[in-house]
Image 1 (cartoon, rainbow, N blue to C red):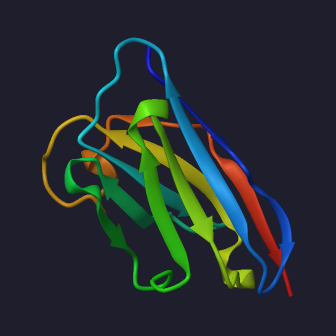
Image 2: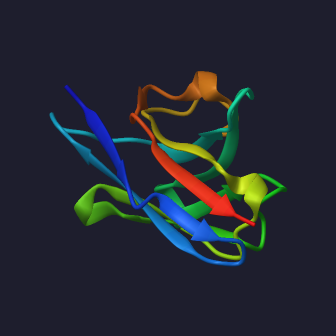
Length: 125
């Protein structure tokens, strides 16, 4: 069984920073890409960023471009999301996801096979 465990969430003031981590464990785990999604209260789960292991290619939602950075450490089976210049509208539960093989857009929730339980990020104004 593959498990994705997020950590690093918390409460921060607007303009501050947080670094989320997502560690993969379980049986031999190999993914095409890893992604971060978020879900605010009363809203749907939306794409934040994705990291393709081959070539280290990154993708971002327009709302976080220039503020968030996704990266990965293959040796540790871990992906990170560095979040800077946080805004109150970034408040959400952040979920890590793993995509085992290419099926299309990494911004689509449907293309991911494994999900973590989420970590809460709260940005106060």
